[in-house]
Image (cartoon, rainbow, N blue to C red; front, side, top):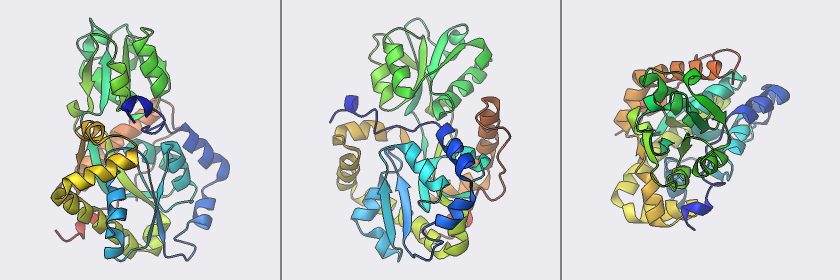
Amino acid sequence: MSSRHLPRRLRRLAVPAVLTLLLSAGCASAKETSPAASGDTKITIGFSAWPGWFPWQVAQEQGLFKKNGVDVELKYFDSYTDSLNALATGKIDANSQTLNDTLASVAGGAGQSIVLVNDNSTGNDQIIARPGISSPADLKGKTVAAEQGTVDHYLLLLALRKAGLTEADVKFQPLPTDAAAAAFVAGQVDAVGVFAPFTTTALKLKGSKAIATSADFPGAIPDHLVVTRDLIKDDAKGVQALVNTWFDTLAWMEGHREDAMKIMAAKGGVSVPDYESYDKGTTIFTLDQNRAAFSGDLAKQAKEISDFLVSTKLVDSPPPLDGLFAPQFVQAVQP
């Protein structure tokens, strides 16, 4: 299947649905229904289609969870939003998700902690503009589409700020990511914020080009393994085993790259060449990079993203950051 057929599967969506679900259901249900907290020793991990999360499939197929003494049910979600909802309501114990979405869930009352940095987006998120627009500064007065509240909306604001502009200087058009890319190709907007594979769609407009990407803002779009705080309280040993498994997986992939790429491409429903093109825009974090991120970079990004969530009215007040980061697990990994 080519990337043109993937818009529903390779989506990192916005957070309003998660907030609504949290507010309506209440956070008490998460503790009551958490699989690990109920006495079941199996840990359920959610993940969806993003290059930085497909190594979990490698871990499962190579028996690396079992090697580390942890019983894991790996649950794949076609819809990323469904995975966010599942973690927020306690249907799973852990999930692969962005810092933006984790902060939004915490703002809604969810007890979640980040225990691992899977990756940073380093090019897969882009601001793409029509011919005649060569830099973010040229967006002043222009119409720009993006999915409100997503990491690409955030990327747009970062690019504008670097150019000395704000969202008030452009005509922002909130649209779902697939619709935003289509509107751009149809000439209905001047620029668009999208992530792979919608970047491929947007660049079909003749003469269009990326004028800013996540590579321009290192660390701005990190992806994580996030667990419920109940899981840390009830099974810290199991959480450590998950983190250990991740780094064992990266080591296995380094020595078996061809086999690993086949596993990950198959899970994503794409060819290996297609998968490799997306993989290039994602930087998988090493153990040293994880430790450095937990030592300061993540806290800085969390503050900036919190301000973004408040300014865009996705949350009413900044999410509490106490307990958000749990660095002890990457610190305990034996190199």
